[in-house]
Image 1: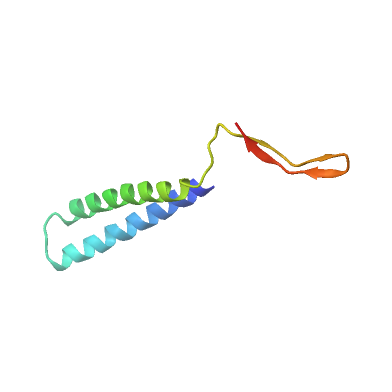
Image 2 (image 1 turned 180 degrees about the vertical axis):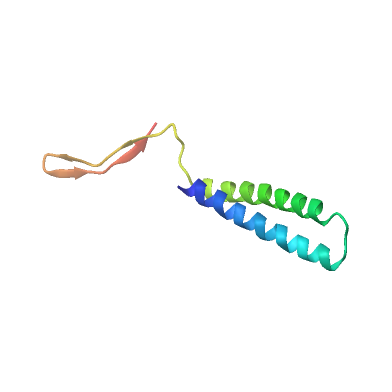
Length: 84
């Protein structure tokens, strides 16, 4: 679910960046404003995706670990843990 949120936010960010760049270039009266706006929004999308995935996936655990849930042994709860 987290990756879909990252992709959605990156798309919204890049669309906003596209229109902001187009607006600024329109004020400066540049001829190739659509090309530059598209280029800036694609680069912004890639940078946003890269940093978002790196930031949010740093704390994830190693997929090689297996989880042993808590269990009930002789009326006492034994804690669950991760093991390799």
